[in-house]
Length: 101
Image (cartoon, rainbow, N blue to C red; front, side, top):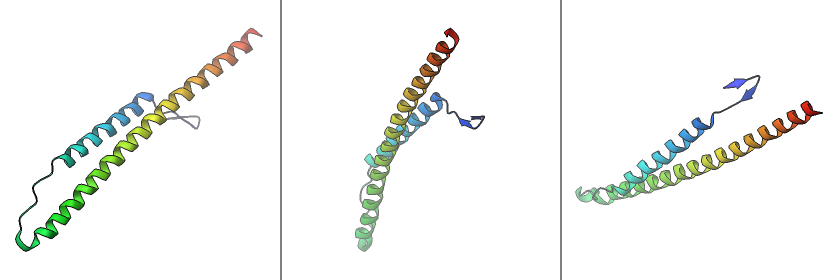
């Protein structure tokens, strides 16, 4: 949402996004944990196993990436909250100093 060219993202929206990322990472991790049995498809069993191993590796990497994105977003939200609070305090202090002078 913009007001006079400024971007303001509600903290609740950011918290929700971080939670959704965490949840998605958990779902992907759960899929990775549910490894199906290696298929027996005769002479193609080796190729099928290679594909399955590749998919499992990709799923694990996806879960790691989602977890890292969730952590980074959580850290960014904390920094945003801290910076926003510090800016608010500074503006209030300046306003108080101006009105009492």
